[in-house]
Length: 265
Image (cartoon, rainbow, N blue to C red; front, side, top):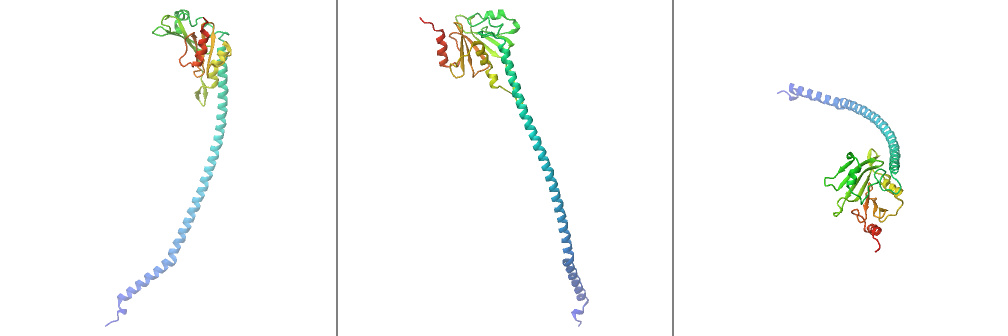
């Protein structure tokens, strides 16, 4: 009986195992470390490229930030300059409006020249007779007539009646100012100077007077009339016949106003 170690199968199998072991030894000893080294080199190169790209991008970003900062500073400077110019322009507008308005009034007269002949206590029909039709806007009920002035800082004058027993008698006149546009950052605003222009006008043409209550002023005009101005509603003023007053007039002012027209018995 032959020895199993001398058989061809054993010899072939042993040779294969030996070859596999030799190949495995070479692979794990030389080949894998070689690839690992190559991978490490590749990773190192990629990391170096990534770091280089990051540095480049950071430099670009920093440069862009510096440019943006410089542009922002320039924009802020231009904005401040624009605000300064807008404020100066608004101031000139208000001065021009005040001067234009003052030039159309005579001292002691509550209405501009050319419109001062009709006052409360006179007939409303006189308004329609005096002014051209294209200047008039007549209320359908016939108790209010608006005269479109649009000159000298005055937009319009509104004449109204209010006495049942005397339906044609004017009891109040409302004078509204011409509205100018002040601007700030491209938007319309109403500055304090614009709001004060009517008060300045009234004090110039009718004389200085103290508040009868917070923000409320009045001036006596002759024996039967007075002018009333409320700074809380700064775009118009009233001329009233004695005994007539604006809604919202304070009780303190009403008492003082009424005292002007109460005659001693």
